[in-house]
Amino acid sequence: MRQLKERGFFNGLLLGMALSFITGLVVVYLLTALGVISVAVLEVPRVQMLFEWSRRNLGLSIFPFGVTLGLYIHSLRSLQQRLDDQCPLDEISQLEHLNDVWTSLFFGIGVIWTAIGMRSALLYALGDTGMAAQAGATAVLQRLVDGGILTALTTTIVGGIGGYMMRVVKSSLLGTRLSRYYEAQEQHHASRVETLLRDIRESIRCVSTRPNPVLALQEER
Image (cartoon, rainbow, N blue to C red):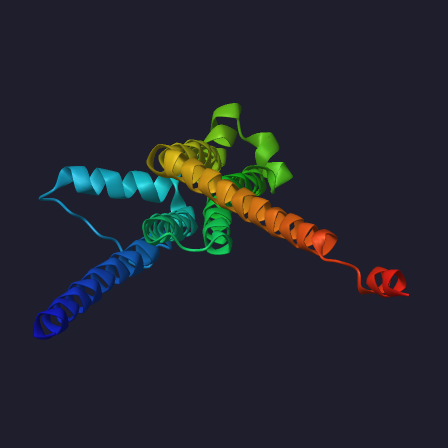
């Protein structure tokens, strides 16, 4: 009992530390993406490059992508645990449906953010018609890039690739187990139906072999 309490304490401590670290990263990224602060990681240039690439190509879409991915991983682990515990069919079906919902939502975020990015880029580049007419094609393209067209295109790629990868991961990890589970449930249901029909047949046979009291009285008369 004491070991379980200590393990729960350390697990809670690690979870709290991880959530605090992730929350700090989210706040720093959000403030940097909005231009409130500027963060430079000079000693680790690769981290700085990755941070700048994410800010320029993903923007604020990294938050809904990240939340959806976290919910997908949580539902996948819950589904795996329910399969290990041989939970009822309705729980397994609900968790599998929820996992498919997060996958579809990941696709949808890419599509929605593409529309948002394209609209923002076009408004920024062509909103002022006089300036757009005076500027050259190169200037208009640069304004499209500055307006967020890279974010629109990148979120399409991330949403598509990520959504298909989520389907592949689910099929690879739990596809066979889900098929066997549903097959076992169908066999169990079929055996229950067969048992019920057998009991009905036995009941009908017992009733048919039992002597009819009305006929017995008529014979006595």
